[in-house]
Image 1: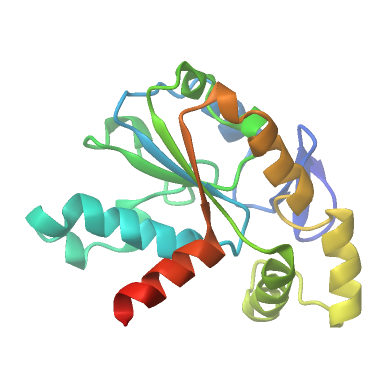
Image 2: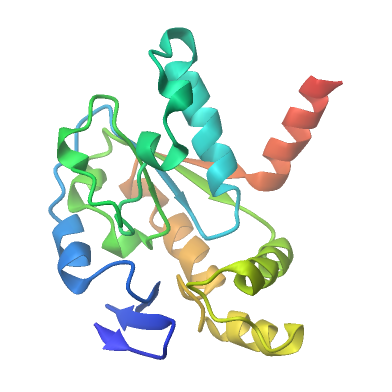
Amino acid sequence: MEIVDKYLCKYKGFYFVQNQTSAENIDSIESFEIQDDDIFIITYPKSGTVWTQNIVSLILYESHRDGTENITLIDRIPWLEYNIFQVDLTSRPSPRVTCSHLPYYLVPKGLRNKRAKIIYVYRNPKDILVSMYHFHKISVTLETPKDFDTFLEKFLAGKVGNSLWLDHIEGWCTHKDDFNILFLSYEEMKKVSWIHVM
């Protein structure tokens, strides 16, 4: 893994947050054994990841909670590449739900058999930019932006964790036929949830 700066590293053409993953972990993801009922929530950061995790969790566990309401979200739906708590992802009970910000070319090869499900959530990049900017200001693991204009330049150059937004979404859209994938728009999800509240 190439160390880019104090906060970022680069591997296989993709920027990762420093000290949250390793080259060995990313390489092992390629051969991660897929089960037919696996569900992967894949997003670019700040696109509705936690919201989607909660929705999927409620769908899967609401009728038979068994104490899941007392289990943290990261334990219910752990991260594939940022497995900082060293969760044994292979031995999780079915259906296994995992979250990721990975581009299409770094996810497990077994996902291309189209049996496991991918939920890809995307969002307007202007809203992602603003959300990321504010998130960077409060996070201890991310670089605190000098100002919005400087952060905008980094975002547009893809020199932020998880690289360029356009590359991420374009890669998944271009290769959508390789996967069993459902694309959800953050804005549409918001509109539907608002309609149900009324």
